[in-house]
Amino acid sequence: MPPGSQKIEALADAWMSAAMATNLGRENMSAIRALRLCAPAVVLVSVVGFRGACAQSADEQAVMAANTAFYTALSARDAAALAKIYAHEDFVMNVAPSGKSSGPGWLSVEPWTKVIAQVYAQLEVKPSDVHVHVNGNVAWVVDTESVSAKLANGQPQNFTLTTTNIYEKIGGGWLMTQHQPTPVAK
Image (cartoon, rainbow, N blue to C red; front, side, top):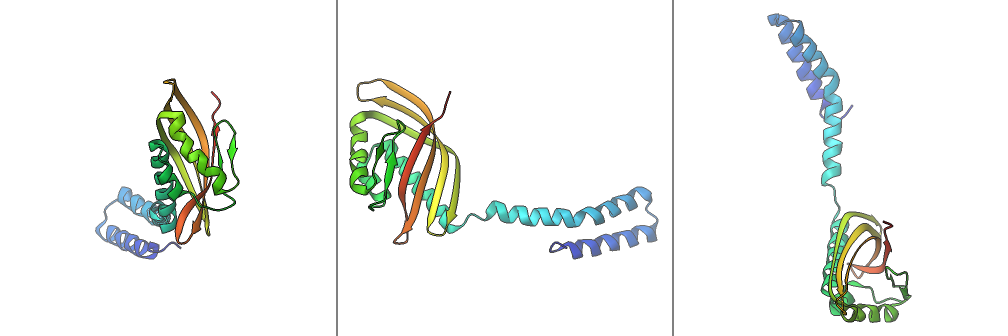
C-alpha cells in the first residue's frame, strides 16, 4: 500500500461511521466509499509524480549548465570559451552539420573553435527539447538546435538540427567530448 494511504483509509472509515451515525444519506456514503477506494492510488501517483518531477540530480544540473555554456560560447563564436568547455583529450570529436568531422583529439577540434568566427558574421544557436541522461561519469544531451546565422559574406542561413552532445566528468567538472549535429529533413 502506498505511504500515507493507511491514514487516508482510516479517515475514510471515520467519515463513513460518522455519516452512518448521522444518517447523511446514500450520496455521501457513495462519495466516502469512492474516496476510500481511490485515495491510495491518488497518494501513490502524487508521491511518485512529485519525486520524479523534482528529482533532477546535481550531475544532471551540472550537465545542463555545461550544455548551456556550450551554446552560449558557440553563439558568441568564442574560441576561448569553447576551449574551456571541451575536454583536451585524444578522443574528443566534433562533427559539423555538413558531416565533416574534426578529430579525434583536441588538437584537431581546436581549429574548428577558431574558424567559427571567420565563417560566421553572426551566429545564434538555440537548443530546445533538451533531454539529459547521466550514467556514471558519462552524460549525453539530445536536443534540437535552431540555427540563425549570417555568413561572413552576408548570406543568411536558417536551419534546424538534431544534436547529440556527449560529456565526461573529468576533474570534477563536465567537459564536452563530442558534438554531433545532424540536419533535420524538411
